[in-house]
Length: 213
Image (cartoon, rainbow, N blue to C red; front, side):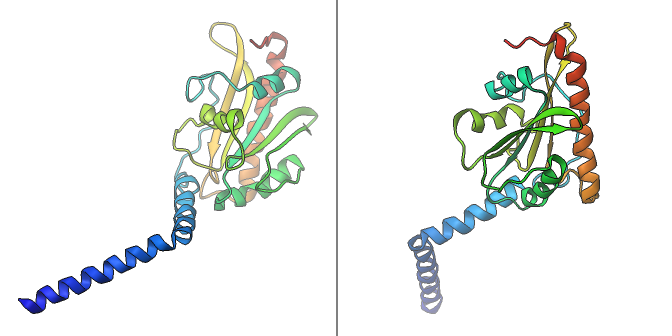
């Protein structure tokens, strides 16, 4: 009995010491924890997701479209937003494809904006690392996160379309991750390119009737 009690006390001391050491080295623990959680929560959660190519009028959080989106829709053309975090393996996989699609160069930490000529039409490309932005740019992600899982990479394309009431309104599509596990890079490029081309066609058809609030 005494021997068992001694073993239990010894085990308790060892465990307490280990936990104490973990808290002493908080920086290391937080760095590892943050990296693991970020990867699990934002990169891998969408791996089995069946991508939806449907556009919708209703924003994910019921809030109006951000001013920077409306301004570009009014003056330039469709808007493509790429959201990521600093620690995100699949963001790193997808961004070279975005650079190829839009013929751009940017770093993963960048908050980057450029109007590009895409197949003869203007498309506003916006790259947002949510670790480095606040206010409108940060909150814009919630507006378009249709699945509500806070996952990245997240790609949102906003254009305009005529709704059932006969009013031309912002119309958007959001896809996540690497799109489909079975796709190769060329197929991923084709999917994103087709979404952008559809947004350009819709924009061209509906631009004369679009009046921003």
